[in-house]
Length: 217
Ligand code: G6P
Ligand code: MG
Image 1 (cartoon, rainbow, N blue to C red):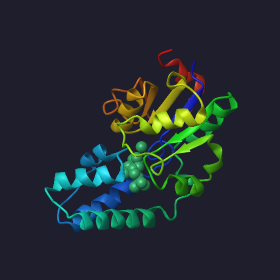
Image 2: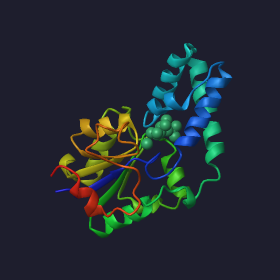
Image 3: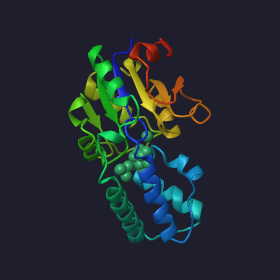
Image 4: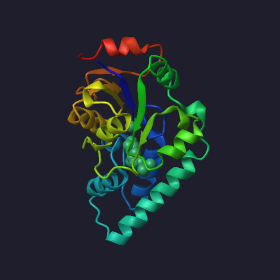
């Protein structure tokens, strides 16, 4: 029986993916190459450090350890600038309602995000007090597709992996949930997230029971 929901943040609860993209693109451009939306798909759910490694590989660029650190700081500064004005209006369609109905059904809810900015974002969108557990990029050492973030969330909720449903918009995140032996609902396009047990465009108009019915028992 499913008794817990674990939500990714970026691209599932809030539309921050576009700001991550803009900040990475700005960084790539400042290093002398371009970064497309197509390539950005590979960065969704991927930690800050792994993202920069991937971007540098795509651009055929090498940085010293100091330059690497400085690039991470610059990207995060731009990202923080972009998200300065976000508020509850950037919560993705139906996400807050879905979270509330899962809670009303007695399910536990956790956040499982690679982002080190997760709490700041949850505060801005007014959802920080809605979770029974928050596991973010400050609490994990392994990037998705490693299952660490979701296993930690289950541990904090005191539930087993098979009781959890993960909501993910990223290929790496779907794989992390599968690696954790959890049921996974992809949020986005089925053609991209085909490994998920089921895929929704967004949470709009869907009850928790509708979603649970689409998952393996
Ligand atoms: C999420 C996003 C990634 C981002 C990562 C780290 O998983 O999907 O695009 O790189 O978090 O976020 P941070 O806010 O710590 O840079
Ligand atoms: Mg995401």
